[in-house]
Amino acid sequence: MLFTGGTISMVVDAAAGGKVPTLDGAAILARAPGIESIAELVTVDLGRTPASHFTFPKLFEIAGEIRRWQADPTIDGVVVVQGTDVIEEAAFLWDLVLDGGAPVIVTGAMRAASDPNDDGPENLRNAVRCAAAPELRGAGVLVVLDGTINPADAVTKTHSAALDTFQCLDTGPLGFVRNGRVTVERARGPRRHVITDRAADGVALLIAHVAMDGSLVDAAAALRPPAIVVEATGAGNTAASVVEAAARAMGQGIVVALATRCPAGAASDAYAFPGGGATWVRAGALLTGHLSGPKARIALAAGLGGGMDRAALAALLADPPGWGPAVERAPLPPLAIAAGAA
Image (tube, rainbow, N blue to C red; front, top):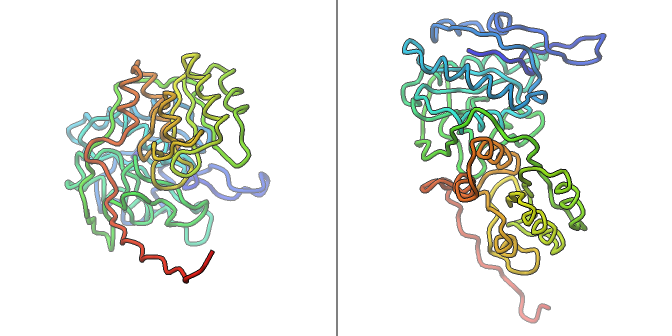
């Protein structure tokens, strides 16, 4: 169990006026009675860092520690305890760069240790159960909170405070932990992978919005980032001036990727009006599959850090063959339109 800090380590400090990192790994574990009966634990303290303070070097340092324990034949699984602010990005980076078979479970808490009915202790117990579960071996990096087992590439933090905030809106979860029992309902499926020990600095992320023009893209390109991710509206659409600015950036050698700002779904080339997704693709933008903008940024930073060329980056961003939503949506009923209606 690797402890890095986060809300699970925090208590209210009157002098500071709010919650601050306080508890170390031993103190956090002491608040989870019964966890020692689930598995024999080896604990490692890696600091008390709020997740919003993470840097790429820190994330790769943690990745190295995970890899070290995965290589130990006496270790059945690894649990990383961290803050939830960027848990979906951190877990996804580790999912990209790690290839060990031992399960890696990332967990934390939505309520601080000093909050009533805090969720940290049960999340810890469930994470240990999942790390020790042989049916999750080879499933990559998983995020486990509120009794839900989610793959790192599909999980999204959907609410700022709710206990069930972590959901896979496109695919649904892999399984659940109920009454102390791990139930896996579907296989993880194919994963993206990058061989690298560093990430490119400065990959930019922009969110499209109403009345947006190309000036923000031009401003971002002026910083000479290695790549820019644009979260477009809907299925990948913006004003025409935005894609024109993106084309200028690509002309300078900057990689541009197109995602959707919607919490589920993917950007596509379905729309061909000026600024539609098709015009982005024709201009040279890379589609990001079902990756969110923040995760597409992680993938690009890792891929560029690993020396990938444009074709390899395109393949990395795209959904792996066989990846796809597992949730079947019932067809909508036909619209009933009154005769003579305008």
